[in-house]
Length: 193
Image 1 (cartoon, rainbow, N blue to C red):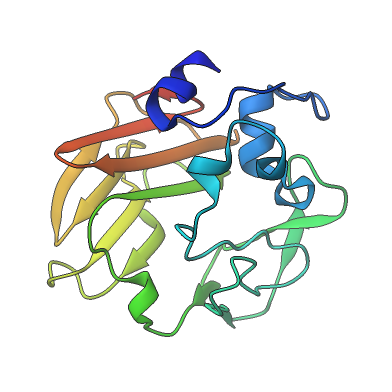
Image 2: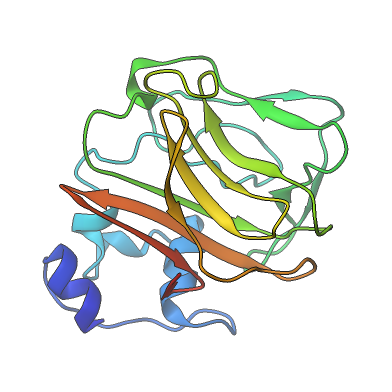
């Protein structure tokens, strides 16, 4: 809590335990509870900064309120996620993926944070988690996992952040890439990567 308070400010409050994972991940993962309304997360989660949030609760609708709904390419397939009962994750194996129409709200204009919970099912295969724009084009960005099993964040086609370690298949990973001013950081499962 102290680290996030120093980074994002706000008012310190109780951390509420949910399910069986640590509180930090549950606040980030379980959008249904909306912890930001009564704890120290509001500065990070609210104030109009959220422009896309897809909880995949048997739907590809954007829960941010910005209208960036996703559309399936391939057969829509939802699977059990981590902390909510029922189908709370999108199965993007094979040729299935989701697209979101180009919207100005999704353009990077300064500081940003990308977050995703991912469960890779194969090693040695490159894959995008979040991608916008043509590879290397101005305004493009990508959060992904390379054939070396390392997570990366690219802006305008160049690696900005790359995890030092490889992360093997068949595990859940909470991946966060963030930039504030000239400082960019990458986290996997809450630890700087």
